[in-house]
Length: 392
Image (cartoon, rainbow, N blue to C red; front, side, top):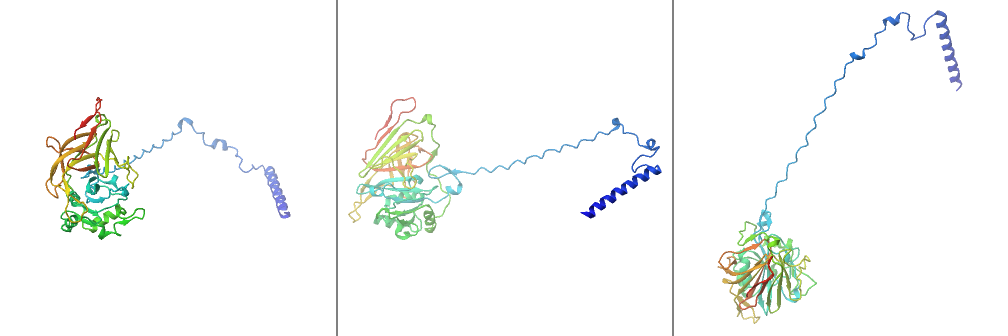
């Protein structure tokens, strides 16, 4: 601190000395103008002569690039339902599964994913189902049961993978003659159980065999069924406009051990299905109501099959023709079914012999023995107060 005070004092003394010297010699302080310098000073700038700066050009906005639109996916009609799907989906090989219909098997799984469902008599008054899957596979499906030869004839219409658990002697013989897919691709649980089928513990045998989507697709490849183009055999059209649909309507048929009822729902354009013990049939896999877009009832000749088993098995005249009721968009027409050979499609015609047009979506086919009572009552059309009965 002392060194700083002394240095400050010395600096003040030096300033004083410099000031005194300037005054004594007449010299001007540093920076002061000298006499005569005023004339040499530059003139003040003329405001009017000032140059206006040129404004910087406004940059042009960079155009926002137009995004490239995503290509619209190409859709084609699914061959069994007419639903719009991707081409690779429409080419998936159909898979048919035999499904149990005993009371102990209900509620069954897999119905809502099926493209077409067949139900027909088996034996002892107990019917059986065959579910055909094409554009969609079920998350869970079952209980899977044994084969009958007339179901093989319906599955052969699509050269389907045919899933079952054993079968009648005639069915097994028919499958043995088709070991290379001549009619169907045999997918017996007796061979593929534990690999593509599983037995659940919640139900007792024989009502406990199930499968699922991933297993079914793998099994289809394993038995040699390849995906490829499929040709639709039925005609499909979109839903009728709401204003053209009737209100209500009922279809009833009955097997000795299961009575079936459909109630037409105008809002959804579906036939809400109920069965004995289940007024509202529910798919156990999805929790959804079973409700097809189309319902077909066809009459066919059934007779006892003398195969020596004493199990009261039946044989059916699947090749030929017969009477049929075709219900779609809430309206029912009476026509004819025809099937020319084991592998030929079952087709449906109106009273004039023209192919019928179904509504895009799922179809249920009820195959009934000749002489069965069929009750069909369409609801009233818009502007009408009287329901339209369809005689049996």
